[in-house]
Length: 634
Ligand code: BF8
Ligand code: SF4
Image (tube, rainbow, N blue to C red):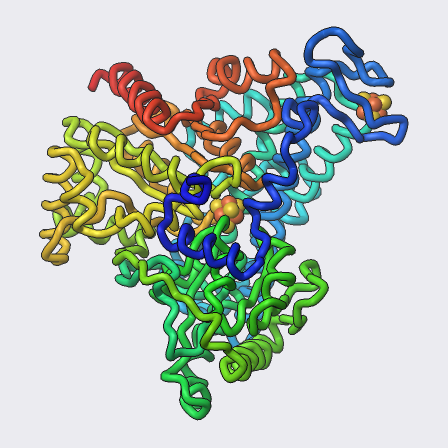
């Protein structure tokens, strides 16, 4: 039926039916009402960059072939893409900036965030060339913060330190020769806005190189910087065992959902949910159950073992359970529709950030200096709402899958170190070299309403695992694979090919799990794609090759957000073939499409690969990996 094509997640299917019964409009209904979607927009050939427009190019060659100013389809498509990638980078850099600020205030003792991971702090400092000998963590943290602020406010024509300190050496040379190493993230994002206004750059190649530069802004001033700061503040993830899917909500508990991306608030909420549990008991509940949606969910999963509720496309359905007492949101990927839907149940929707307000939601301002107060207020609002829950409206689908998560690079090295304490990467590298592991694919990114929820992630990964490809995952892709039971030891027995299975068994045994390592390693949120970058960089350094030469590929099977385009662009700049399962709005320009999927590879080593069928995508990625193996003589 129509209902089943919307999602393969049984909990979502169940709740879509309930939404219909309850008269709730969801993302899928609104998607239907948008059909047919604008052909010009889909191809990327409309421009609104000045108010002589809007202009649009006739893709069939019968109408106008230039905008009023003379911009061609190639120029319009390239400009639009650069703006999208810059917007994605802006989101990540803004997130990272908040985390730097938090570390500064924490180190100054101005906020109640103890530095949780002095070891990570030392590692980051040493990577930046800072001597940590004899320094207190707070003093050292301030030195690290100074370097980060130095990058954010770099007025010189030198590379950002976060790039030069962390990128693979051979990559730096490639980027240098192309003139795309970022100096200062804010300056580069500003420049991209300038470069794409009316009457500026009309060279599609130059615009695409600027797009690649935005990928580096995203990768280093966004992802890497955010992860480093967050690990120092909250701890570097280590393996945790919990569950995923909406069945983690509990009928007899106060259910509080954290949704968004920045863990500065959600970490506090997790802590206060425990502390205020007696207040929940006082109103007849057994405690407070916290669960996560989207990437803030991944953050508190990785560090605190908080269960995953669901991913992007089912965020509305969480409320349709009728069992969510409060949903607190911070930034990014939050559907404005949540407010309308909450009003049909007893759910308190709580916004917290000055740049994310939604009419109908309760706004509890979140400031670092008053984080504990805000978190307490939010937990108490959830407890208060519990009493208003209408049992007749409650339906919690009984689906949840066991998951092992928390695979930071440090945790992976820890597990492998049981096999080789001196060179922890050796067992992984050896098994890649001998072909037991054919290669590694990182599956990342979102759900997109244009694709049956989760189907592309799950079907593609089944094919990869069967072919002995190890999978690492982040973001909503990680949620999808978690829900599908691919992040536990049974998943290894069920889905992994024979040689991959043997390796995962050996590591699991050596690491004392008493069972195989999962076939898909959960490496965190979308900013934690930096962890995948770190793993790739470490592997490249260990093997003494360029990251572009590694048998490694990436995929965003169901991308929706501009951030996913920015992350993908970074991966391409790392020399990695990056698959997209949804076609971005570039097909209106043959030249841009050709550059992204073929031409870029000649100058930068990586390229985009578009394939909208999961099995074919998996086989295409495996073919790409095999070519890289061949070139390495493997
Ligand atoms: O940063 S994967 S839908 S939640 S954008 Fe959003 Fe996409 Fe999910 Fe995480 Ni990432
Ligand atoms: Fe039209 Fe050119 Fe203005 Fe774009 S910048 S709206 S193509 S006139």
